[in-house]
Length: 213
Image (cartoon, rainbow, N blue to C red; front, side, top):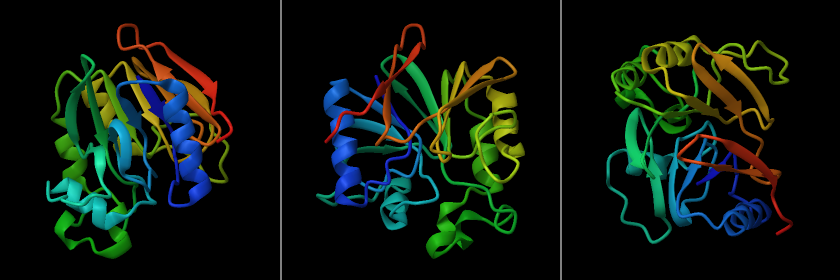
């Protein structure tokens, strides 16, 4: 199974890198941790929305209304769970903004649709039997290099409730690993630098250089 970090594939060079990773992995399915920004994909790709997306597409996927030839094989995880190669894979779409968190989702407009709200977190906490969880915000304790303190309490709360074996995190464009309780947490390098392969039997995750497009 292919695993990808941020792709930012709104530009031709980033799209070429994204598809180079797909070709190199030669997988049947993929997981992607947000900031995808291109949705016409070669294989079924289970992704969470990041803070940089086409939010019209994301909202259409959220509500099952996509009928565009520019969207194929893109499955949005939005406090939902899917079975992928025998694994229960769930995800929380969006990032955290304290000014938006207590609003209902239908009150988020334009770029504010990038955020998750309390109802998203509460729905994610009610999921069951999750093996792999995708988040665009990191739980506390992940040693990535930023100019601010990394760690979102609401992601902590979801991991506390679900106790998945593996949590895959986007957003930081850096490979890093930690543990949160019983959960192994991996911050994914961006897709133009690295792609990953996940063994669904063992949850072993291997990292590879993305070939030159």
